[in-house]
Length: 266
Image (tube, rainbow, N blue to C red; front, side, top):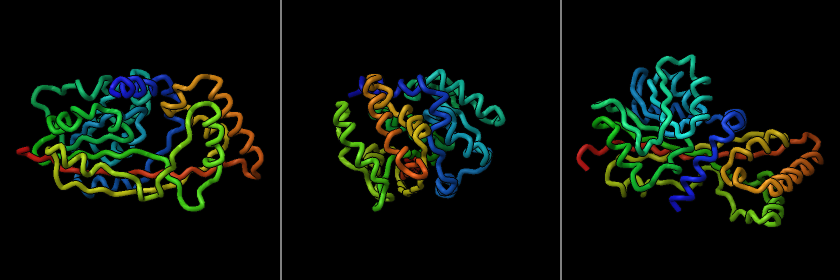
């Protein structure tokens, strides 16, 4: 399982430019909630785990936070540096969060991760975050996931036959908006954090065929597909959307913001 995680999390670096173009932005309300719940203010020092191309970094930097971003992929880190060049208080470091070490004695006000925490090693991630934080510091993480509301776009159900045909398997289903699973119990079980809060967000994005295919090309499962599998799936998406008057599909996104305070004496 660990080998699978290590291999899949490294795939994103191969599509750095597409990732930057295709992945959705997070809602402003998420960042406002994060700052309100943690009390973070302009000038506070934050480690961001796996920033990719800076989708979450830019909103945090615009709010005045000083960010050290630890990115596993060299190409992703390079794109992030380009995107964040206007923010002198942001530093992008190429490395793995699990093994990265700051300057001796340095601690941080928060550790955050946007659609990256689940890729880190579950055996060490809470301990590493705890070690990086000052007393009373905060851990915050979330991920953008597919949510399916009542009346959601039927194309996702229709495409399951194609996924099965190409050997990619059928989806078991998707959670309803604001009913996504959360990690409160896992955080508390670490014994390193308390005052856990869980806040859910949802939003919708409309895609034409090419923009949706670009999005799929940033998912680890699609990157790992054989070329013939991708070609068959993408041809079906183009064909189905070409039959629609507006040529668009509706994808609903959800995110669960977890915020937890460092326990000073675990």
